[in-house]
Length: 491
Image 1 (spheres, rainbow, N blue to C red):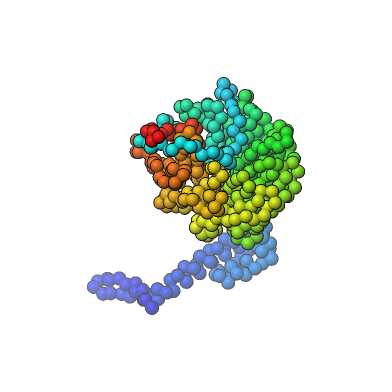
Image 2: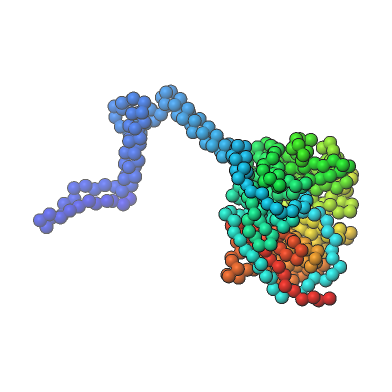
């Protein structure tokens, strides 16, 4: 045990008035602190302590009046915190949204329907071009970034952003044409249908989120549909036998089929947590479910098919992992990607089922979780995984044709884009630019990473938007670029 010796020298003589074991100092300080706290609490309740010390504090805290008041205070504090969380995670008030939209100007742009990312594409018979370089046509910045890609309609790019707006930008020069106020983070890509803009909102903490309907001619917020969950999944418009429905997923509040003209509910199902947008094929609606943060046991993951008109379950199969993106529909099969985001696992892949009967057909396993939106190219499935790999599955031979390792680090949540004009795949990585690939062989054709003069490549979660040999990207900091390819013919 150390000894603290306090001494002084006077007239050449050393005096030692006090010797204190240093181990006692912390206990002394703790005792004094408890005594001060005891005196303070006692004063609050009008109690006078005869002596000071921890014993009196304990006696005070065990008094019924003090225990009751402590319980009340804790309930009030906890209730206030939960109330703040509840209100903070609500969408914006309706009157605020309407007031903001009154100031939106009109535009003379022409709009074409952009319902959703196409599920199928026919691979061009042309060989991919040999590229000399990538030209950055323009680069602009909006106040905050975007998590998902925008939608191009006519000469406009509609992009939902973290600042609570849907930004309408000119495809030609990147200038902002209009902004549509939502108020909450606009996570999903918007869609355009019949002169209207439809978009969801929120993150996983958002509740009672809405699907908004905005009149593109007037710029006004015309109507909305309210769920009990978050609507960060891609909204989808589908048509079957003359009936048009808007489909929205809402987390734990499941799937909603909505009349896009009246914004009234047609049917609703809650089979599990849904962030994956739907795919529609011949009167069947296909969708997958996933497991949320901290939900390692409570829910299971399913591949599900519903009747378009009624919402009646056609078939349902449990999957070994979550399906966070919409399925890919081939000529005979509905193929669901699988892979966890919130749980550490190496399990990933694609599960394929008969489109009509739901009978399991085959599975393609992957060493990493598959989280990119899959699409079908000449009846093959192309997907990307969490580690930045891109693979093509031969659905006839039921095996992988090729896999491209982008050799990047970290997590990558983007999907692969395809441009039929150049017969090129574009894979936007989180931190290392864009990889342009040959769709037949999976070979790297060009790796684009901007120079210092072009601006740093910030973290990116949104896939590239393809527009006739051009690509538009957006990152989490709000930088938007339009890129074009300069190439030589190799035919």
